[in-house]
Every structure is written in C-alpha cells, then in structure tokens.
Amino acid sequence: MRPAVRPGRLVLLGHPVAHSLSPRMQDAALRAAGIDLRYEALDVPPQLLGYTLDELQATDAAGNVTIPHKREVMARCGWLSEDAALAGAVNTFWWKDGTLCGDNTDIEGFRLAAEALLGGVPRDARVALLGAGGAAAAVMLAVSRWPGVRVRIGNRSPAGAEALARRHPAIAESSGELATAIRGDTTLVVNATPIGMDGVSLPVAVEMLPPAASVLDLVYREGETPWVRAARDAGHPAADGLTMLVAQGALAFERWLGFAPDRSAMWAALGRPQPG
Ligand code: NAP
Image (cartoon, rainbow, N blue to C red; front, top):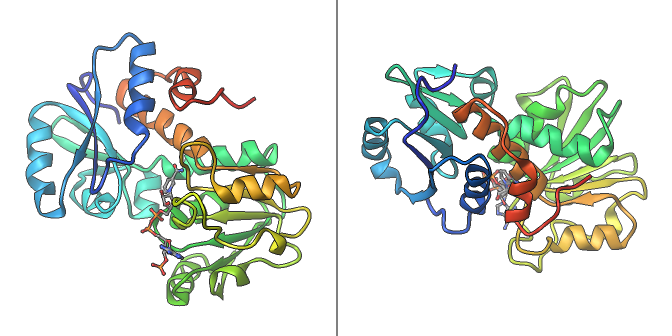
C-alpha cells in the first residue's frame, strides 16, 4: 500500500522535535534524488494532533511520527502494516485514496542495525534489553525473529519490564532493574533508554559487560554516545543509534516515494561515512 500520488509535503510529527536529525538526513536523500521537497519537523502538542492530521491530508502529506504520537496516529489509521499492528505504534504514515496508512519501520530498522553490528543473523543470541518503552517494544519484535534467541529485560520501573516480557513469554523474562538484565552469557546489550543523551551518563558500567558482548546503543548524538565510546575502548563491538536512524528513515522514504534513497548521502548529512 503506497501513496497514490507523490506526497505534497513530508513532515515529522512529535513533541518536542527540535533535537531530531531526521530533517537533515531526509533532506539530503531528497536532494540526492532530485526531488523538490523539504522534510519539515512539526512540533505538535497532543491536543493539536487531530487538527494537524486533517490539514496534512488536504495537502497529500506523508511523514514520520515520534514521541508522544505513535500510538494515537496508529489508532487513527484505516490501514496498518503487519509490523505497525504488532507494535501497536506507527512511525511512518501516508494517505491513499482518503485512507490514513501506518507502518512501523523501527522494527526492521533495528534488525538491520543489529545484524550489521553482529555480522548477520545471530543464532541463540542472549540479549540484555535495557528499557521497556516504545523502542524496546520494537527491539523485542525484531529479535523475536532470530532463531534460539532469549531476552532479559531490565527497566527503571520493573513493572514495565514485566509487562513487556509478558507480551513475549516464549523468549523473554523480566530481570527487574536495568543492570540485572546482564548475565555472564549475554551476547548483545541494547540500550533502549534515553540515558547517554546528556553526553555523560552510562546506562550500565562497562565493567559489567561479559567479554564477548556487543553493544548497541539506540541513543545518538553529535559525535558518539559515552557508552559506545567506553564499550569500544574496552574492546567490545559497539554502535550508536545512527545506524538504526538511517535504516528506519531509508525504509520510510521508500514507503513514501517507491524507491530506495541514497544512504551514503544520508550518512554524509549526519557527518559520518556510510559504514562498510
Ligand atoms: P519511551 O517509550 O518514552 O521509553 C523510555 C524508556 O526509557 C522507558 O523504559 C523508561 O523507563 C526508560 N527511561 C527513561 N528515562 C530514564 C532514566 N533517566 N533512567 C532510566 N531509565 C529511563 O521512549 P522510546 O521511544 O522507547 O525511546 C528510548 C530511547 O531510544 C530514546 O533515547 C530515543 O531517542 C531512542 N530511540 C532511537 C531510535 C533510533 O532510530 N536510533 C529509535 C527510537 C528510539 P520507565 O518505564 O521507568 O519510565
């Protein structure tokens, strides 16, 4: 299900949105494709979401959705992709023949980022998932496609970890607080909390990582996150949230426009070369 016509506007709906790197990245992809559109970040308070969507429909807009609107936009969609329905959240939308359509490219974006870090689809991965919010829910759906995977979820509020684990009883269990998710057999640690956005804090001490563990931080900022730097200094394969950001953004671009964007232009706009 694609937009019937090329979108007249591309927007990001969130509150706040000023910190987002998506406009920089998507504008570079649009320029590289020779498309005369700009990607606009719209700061939309919750009480104005319905009005904003009505206005956007009138201009054949399409776009992305971020905190706090992912669930509300999903509830308004007349068509959902399988991933959006599974996640209960929409991060990519467009209209077709008057129907609001929603997809969730965070799941596939995470899978691509994790498999790039791990060198392919892992077997029998032992994942420590830090956080239990929307991003953690997407991580759970992505890793549930890996053969033999087991996940331990740690969260600031243990009730959140328990609720997320209950949605995946065959592969997940709650460990309670953040750091308790990491055990001696952990092969991948994922930070799905905002810890590290301040450029200083670490979700867990690097000394807690087993020697063979890889680190995937969903947080991103100018330069790299402190946790990724510390993990790499200690010899762990590590990547920050930019890989997932580019992957989910490229998939969204494809949904709106029907072809894949130039990922190297997207990386260049973020100030980094495209990873191997
Ligand atoms: P969310 O739904 O609001 O969930 C936030 C999670 O982080 C919750 O588990 C929350 O725990 C925990 N948390 C918040 N502040 C914390 C703190 N100070 N200490 C410990 N735990 C804390 O947000 P989200 O959408 O999952 O996003 C989480 C992070 O992932 C954000 O930094 C976001 O930018 C990043 N993200 C990156 C990408 C990407 O493409 N790279 C995509 C999506 C999200 P409680 O349950 O206790 O509140």
